[in-house]
Length: 310
Picture (cartoon, rainbow, N blue to C red):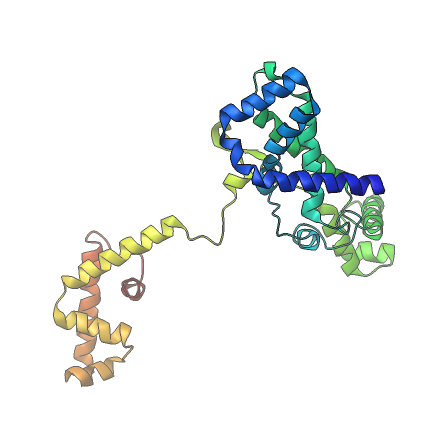
């Protein structure tokens, strides 16, 4: 236990040193000299210098995997899993644990790097760091022992009921077979369906193209550029069309759609009959349709088009 704490302490110290050296990664000649010096001498001092210099790659890889310094182990567990306790998610500093694993991958990259293989060290190191972190995540069973036992029991029950019923069993039938509440069956099925998936995973697109999930999954919080363009374009068309209409037609549309007056109230304002207001309103709508689309009536309702121009 003391050795483990000592190792983690040294790892944390190296990562803290790396924060001060994060800007040095852009110095090509400097890091090439470091690698060359270590490969040539294999001295402990040169090895440590290379590790400290490239330690920011650990934080870079973690950020690309969607793991930030501010996220806690419980937050990550709640967002990605079922919220059940386990040895990994209750073990302390979540980001620090993964940083330590990433640093181990970096150390292995330094020790095993072959400069004559034709690859840059940073590329090779990123692969080793990411692989070490993923191996560590896969080795941790994020389900508690009771939840894992429940999930296996439900899976076995599904197989047994298939032999009896010759069809897929319902959740209620599984619950009756195991003598447990239906909510526990639903939770067990949810637990068994959870998987680790990295945003850096590649997916096949059309015509054999590949892209990472990070680039493919849309951000629902961002507005759709196509919708924004369509809205602004329609707004401009409506404003242009309104300027070509008569003043009385624009006034009637304004009173009806913006002020939300009734036809009778508009008649009182303009001192004309309600029937006359109805005729002028119908003519204004027809004119607006023709100005927006001379060939055919617009698909949008006139009211929606007018409110778009507000």
